Amino acid sequence: MRRLLKWFGRVVLALALAALVVGLWKREEITRLLAVQSLFSAEKIVSNFSNMNKAFLTRPIPRGDGPVSPLPMGPEADLPPEIEDWIAARAVTSLLVLDDGQIVHESYHLGTGPEDLRIGWSIAKSFVSALFGIVQAEGKIGALDDPVTKYAPVLTGSAYDGVTIRQVLQMTSGVQFDEDYLDYHSDINKMGRVLALGGSMDGFAAGLDARASDPGDRWKYVSIDTHVVAMVIRGATGRDLPDLLAEKIIAPLGLQAAPYVLTDGRGVAFALGGLNLTTRDYARFGLMFAQGGQWQGQQIVPADWVAASTTASAPTAPGKIRYGYQWWIPKGAPDGIFMARGIYGQYIYIDRPRGVVIVTTAADRLFREPGVNDDNVAMFRAIALAVAPD
Image 1 (cartoon, rainbow, N blue to C red):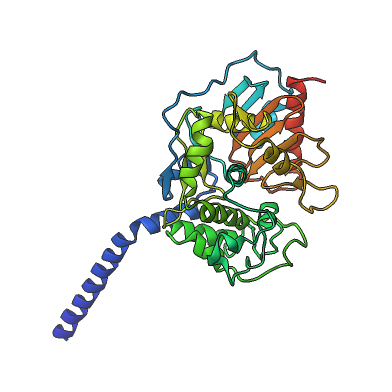
Image 2 (cartoon, rainbow, N blue to C red; image 1 turned 90 degrees about the horizontal axis):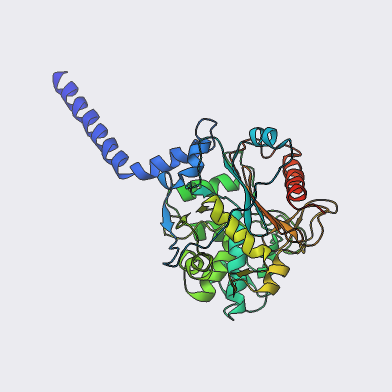
């Protein structure tokens, strides 16, 4: 019996040591997975959104060595009287308003500040769209109706085989993808775990093999489509997204702080939602689009791509919010009003006719409640009208 107990004790000790070794070996992956599970919890969400580099693999995006481009202060605007209630209700962490390129309102909330690099989530999609327009104008990419497999052959045999570039830009790929953030088993959450555990985003996209509809038949917001756009850009140029963004957009804009982007375990950028910038730097990007792609006398994004990408071209449902090439167009909005939008209340709202750009970052855990987006757009319209009356 004594010998048996001794043997049993050695087995237990060996198992404990093995578990310790595995735990240390996988510590980073386990830490990231736990971070994903609590990323949107009420007590952590605000801090998490300013510190994504503590929970995920990231890469810096060099801002270049040029000077910070000016965002001059203008006279403080009188905003709608209900603005404070809206800020509190929507858990807004920052609000910045530009009128003809001047800051007429800038405020930070819930313990955040102007130096915070905030996650923009799907605002990143509009950056990818801008980069695509630049690369195509340089002749690296042919027609929008080219198949994505021409530039990303790893997608051959997947649900993306036979899908065109235009269709992934418009979110009409037809690929089956569940975007329910509240369902642990949804595709979007599976993708999040791939990211957290250092897997391959390219591999995840290539592994999708089901379709909800034929390509081009109907519009459905599918975030992984944006990763495929990025795969096309990388395949066409032979370069990765952070380097291209740094050279083509970030450095020319003269940002105040070097951004960073979340990556998978291969160092591939989380193109569909991984950019982290300051609020003022999101505003610089928005102002560049409000100016038709120009910035300080330089044409950064081709003017015809700015127009095409921010025009409602996708077959969205009548009377609903509309979509272009990775940009949103509010329902009922006249020409020249469009926005980049990310989950939990991130927006760059652009009203070109009035010369107004509005940026919000937020930690709104009720962002998917019915009517929330419509209420936000109504507030942006009220702000624009208050700042630049007819």
